[in-house]
Image 1 (cartoon, one colour):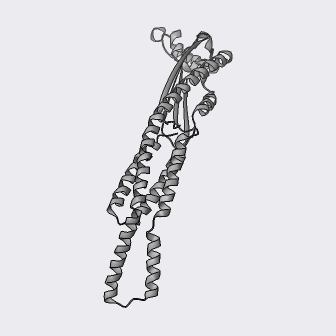
Image 2: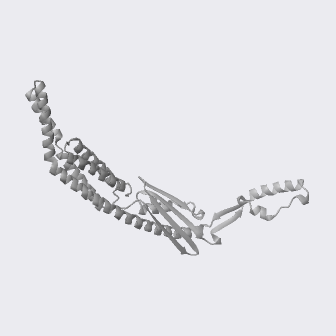
Image 3: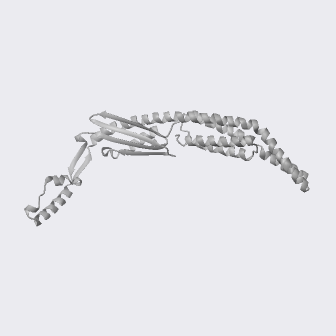
Length: 293
């Protein structure tokens, strides 16, 4: 079953006086690219959330944001930077000594407006409890993300399956027209030989060798066989429960190689048109596969 690389999910949890909201979005990417943005109370725990992402996602650019909407007063430990406070105090006293009392008024609120004076660190116990709640919220969001990715993946799979049936029909028609195409190329070769015979002496043995070589190169039976094998591989990949985006993409490239070879060996108009239609369907499938995990 195919899984899309694009999707979204969100969740919120209210536990132990905490209110946490998690949101996750994923986009196409060749590899897994986890990007985690956490509330300051959770700084330092990014790796825990990356591990959680890897549990649910194997490929794609995944953006996870965790916000703490409520944590309580005890979540932060506040303290004063004593050295910085002494430096400010000395500076203020020096300024005050140079001015008359009417020219300077120093209020406590001026210190409060200096955020660098107040050191704020998370309380370890509160932080540990908050981490547990946040991981649960993030996991719920990731589960919803996977649900949306699977839903979109099912739509992609239905579209690809429909197009693979068309490709199978094209191959069947090419097989039916193969003998006609070979006959046309042989006729074309006979006409070319007849023209040469009118103007020059021909080595009969060399002529037989060239005709045989040309006939072998004109036969595209092997390409048809390989093309059928590649289609079977694509069908198998669609049914697989493992991530198959890379396999699908590689197999489509092989299909393109074989159909191009068939086109180069063919002179029949009907097959030439099928080759064009075949390549168009391959391109549409390739566009869909770019979004598959």
